[in-house]
Structure formats: C-alpha cells, structure tokens
Length: 522
Image (cartoon, rainbow, N blue to C red; front, side, top):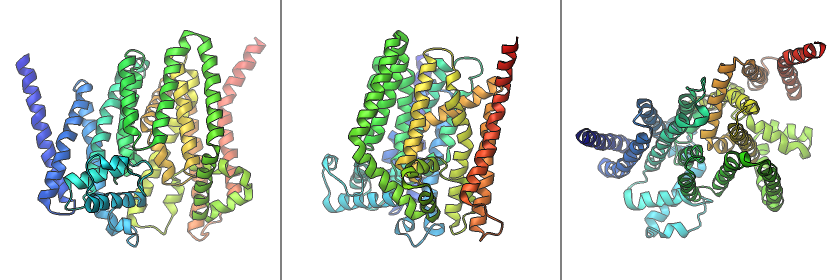
C-alpha cells in the first residue's frame, strides 16, 4: 500500500514537471523577448502553478472528470490569452495603442505599462510596491503582481503573458473546488440533482466571458478562482465552521488587494449564508432580528455612501449615454429621474445579442468575440432567472433559507453590476461574471429542478427571451441596415415585447386559477 502511494506521488511529481516544461515552452514561444529567458520565467510559474492544480485535484478524490475539467479550464484560458496577443494586433482595431500590443482592455494596458515602468526604472525592493498608490490601479493588486513578475522573472522583456498564465492557474484550481463543493454538498444529494455539480462546473469552465476576461492581464480570473474556493468553504460551513471560517478569512485577505468592493461582497454573502444556515433554524427571533438588522445596515450604508454612489452612478450613466446616441435619446424621453432604473435594466441585457449580430462597423476579431460573449449570457440567463425565482418552492429547512438568501444576493449583485457599470457592454458583464460560481450553481440547479418537476415555467422563460431577441433583432437589423426593413420605434418595440411576454407569463397562471376555482366549487 505504501509502495503504491509512493509510486502515485512520484507519477504526479513527474507529471507536474513535464506539464510545466510544455506550458513554459508554449508560453515562451508566444511571448516577446528571447525564448530561453521567456522559458525559464514561465517555468518558474508553471511548476508551482501545476502543483497547485494537482493539489486542488486531489481534494476531489482523484476523480477523472475533475482532471479533465481542470485541464480544459486551464488550456482554454491560456490559449485564449496567447491567441489574443497574436490575433488582436492584426484583426482588432489597429489604430488603438493597446490593441496593437495585444491587450483586450485599455485599463489592462495602462496598468501593465505602469508596472513595467516602475519595475525597470525604479527597481523597487520586494515589499515596497505593496505600500504604493498607483495611477492606473485603484487597489494595486494587479500592478504589484506585474511589478514582481517584471522585476524578478522577466526584466528583459514585457511578457504580460506571464500574468495571463498565472490567472489561468488560479482559475483552473478553482474548478476543482467548485466541483468538489457541489458533489459533496448535502443539499444536492436528493434524487434528480446528481448532475448539478457537473453541469455547474462545465458552465464555470466554458462560460464565454470567463474565457474572454482571462485572455488579458486582468483581475477577473484570479477573483473567480478565489471565489470558487470561497463557495467550497461556505458549503462546509455547517459541519466544519472553524476551518471554513479561516479559509474565508484567508480568501478575503487575498481578494482585498484586487478589489475592496468584491471583498465586501464576499463578507456580505458569507454573513448571510451563516445567518440562514446556522442561526435561523435556532429560533424565529434570529429570522426577524436578522431581517431587521440587514435592513438597517443596508439603509445606513446607503445613506452614508450615497454621495459616493451618486458620483459613481452618474459617471457610469453619463459615459453610457455619450457613447450611445439612442440611449441618450431614450433617457431624454423617459426623464432623468428614471434613467438609473432604465440603464440598470438595460445593463442586464448586456452584451445585447441582437446588437452584435447586426452591428456592421467592426473587425473580424471583435465580431466573433462579441457574438461568443453575448451568446453565452443569453444561453445562461433563462436557467438562471428561473432558478432564482423557484428557490421559494424549496421546502426543507435550512436548505430553503440558504437558497433564498443566495438567490437574493446574486439577484442584487446582477442589479448592482448593471447600475455600477451603467449598462456598459464590457464593465457590466465584467462585474457580473466575478461571482460566476454562484451563477453557475443556480443555473445548473435550475436545469435539474425543471427537469425533475417537468416544469413548463422554464420553457416560458426561454420563450420570453426568444420574444425579446426576435423583436430587438428586427429593431437592430433595420437600424444597421439603413432601414432595409421598416423599423418600429423603440418604445413600440418594448410595448410589443411586454404584451407578448405577458401573454406567455399568463399561460402559467391558467392551471393554478382553474384548480383554485375547482376547489372552491367542491
């Protein structure tokens, strides 16, 4: 037995080394500078990164499915990042400096440029970057990582591909934790939910925005991977409170340099989860007290942070309006007092699938990327929204409490993301996708719940989305084709969508009303 275990460990070590060598060679091939220097720099990240992935996989009980998912998650993100650096300068907007250099996002380009300049011109000590304030990074975490990489691993060339590589390792490790969490979670052990873990993890691995935002030196892959570990810790909160609490505290501290906002959101969902699972079952006093306290905290936070919130929201809304003439026109028609509500609802539709399908003045790279991203969100959203609504049907406690508070949290997060990003097709989904472990879980659970109950409400959600896509496809096609077909006014299009969607929604009320009337007669 001991001999077999030793052999397995040696095999894993050899796999990590071989895997690291291959990945380092591939990364160096598609990075600037000398191949040898790039290879050794990538190898120094790939060995611990590969070890991290293997250790995460071991937590799943050496499951083959987990190994496949982890490898696909890693390969997709590294391949997307390396392909972007090669294709974007050719097939992107070649007149934009960041795209000439292979960066998807301007903020990533400016942040990385600052990190490269500091690392080479100032050559700070290891801990010195931690205490700095940066011009292009509000929190500093990504810039510090860039400085460390350029200072100690790649001083000869600006290999931002190393940051992409590091993000891919963190995201891939999170894959194992999410699968492990859902496979062993007691709330998913009922008949009919056996595939929830696999479906949710495949969504996490394959969701388009999670791939696109990992194809540039951005914080998103790091945050998604870390939050997957946090989700794992929360599913074990009831049975191993101390270890879960320490894990969550560690994740919180690691997230802080990337975003105070996300760290605060993690604290909020953790407290809500603890309250729902550990405290509410003890007494109704905890339920009512928690509701009162939560309401009070939200009101107080809103009042204290109102000036800052208004500044952010006004800036985001203004940016959205000036970048889209028709949005500015619609906001002018409904009145300024309603523009926040309109743009937050508009933000939920981002990236708008009909828009990218028919938008003409774009490049091949951005056309494919836009369709890929929009299709992913529109495929996910009916299952996600269905699941958020049907959590009220869950009967068992505290499972019902946990599902409901998480549904409220993710619904609130989607709304805040829409509001904070002002309906922007990039920043809005960027905030939303950070809590991908929650989005993936609810979507997968919704699929299994609808299948188990043979629930037609899911079909109605899909039909409502199809109605939205059809009407706005007509609207966008006529707009971008020079009115080749007659275009309905915007508000008439919205009216038609509301009427048709309302009719679909009402079909779901016929049977309940009929049963109630029949019961009264009897």
